[in-house]
Amino acid sequence: MSAPAAPPGWYRRSDGLERWWDGTAWTAHERVAPVDPSNASAQPSLYTQPFEPRGGIRWGLFEPVWSTVGGICLIVVALPLLLFALLSLVTGSVLSAVGMGLMGLAFIGCGVAFLYDASVGRRLRRASGR
Image (tube, rainbow, N blue to C red; front, side, top):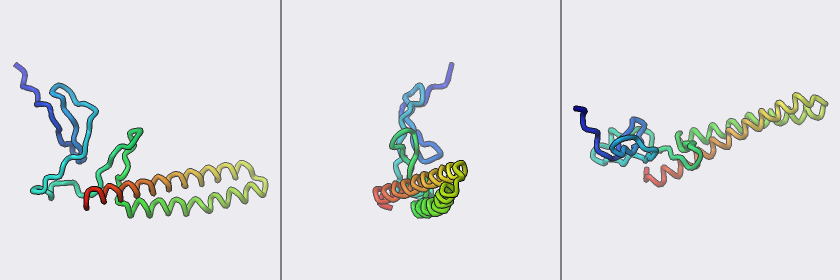
């Protein structure tokens, strides 16, 4: 005789999320685990909980301050690359200009993603009251 299956319900994962068990299999449904005020010390130390707005990308993973600093640093690093690409184009080195230009644009794209993560983290922090 086999052991009885666990009843349907939300079950906590180690990453602070809960997943729905329908009694026979795990579903794709997830949610942020509710906070138990009587056991607040057992909650994860991060004050932001990631969420998936679209495409399965989780935003709000890092402290908003560090995401902001990282985003600004990436954009600042991209500016000399773009300047070098422009100078290379003027001097006739098209291949170097294209390579540096694409690298600069990639750094700017990553910087913008970090800044977006910071804005999501700040909104989550305000929404959770922490």
